[in-house]
Length: 279
Image 1 (tube, one colour):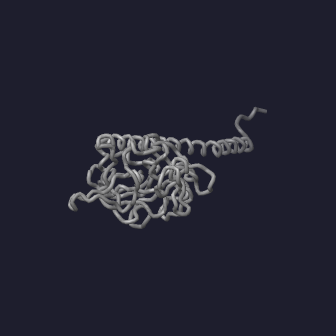
Image 2: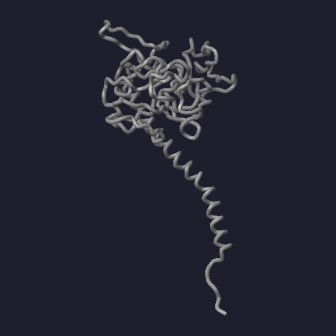
Image 3: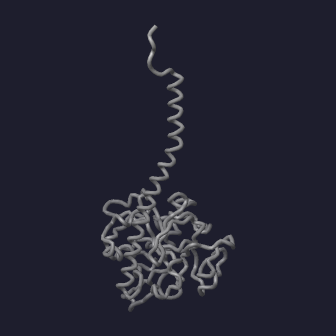
């Protein structure tokens, strides 16, 4: 009687089961690795924009871009000559189609570091829909390493970053009621297509979020005023109003973390890693 070669059905099923188990274990790992790569690419783009903003600042008497509208839009076009690439404005995790001949823009600027709107038609009028205390000069900031410069957004459309007078690039402060995109209310209203991709910062209740958690594994990238970029969960960041001084928390209810010694989050215990408040 000849010896039969090959696998039995049971052996094949065992092999298939082992492969299925390995795939179930490895696929999430591969997915996390791909997401980590996208997060790193996104952080690199944000870093380039942050350096462009700091270069702009040095070339303009330590002033950040002057908003092109009273609502705060228009910083991205002014920074383009320093980065000279449309690609750095987009995050790989942002699937937004910006529209024909427009640029995907996945980052917003902290309104509290923005220079005021100047209307030369009104004899050099300087103002803004947003109230900010103090100077936007870097030398005037008491804690640039703790202050948000750029944050992540999604769904930004109709923006041409090569236009130095564009008025669409978004701003925001991470707390309810403040933001801009060439319209009143900006990121915090229905007048702007862009939404926060950060998750709900310190639990603030804002309608226009892409989700309660950040776009990158439950967190998001942030650039600080000193140029460094880091990934943080939303509960490690504080939005909100500018405090009267670096040692006093903002007086608005449920808005905390406005100074270097008062960066306590809404739980009353934890310290914020970064704050949107001007320091």
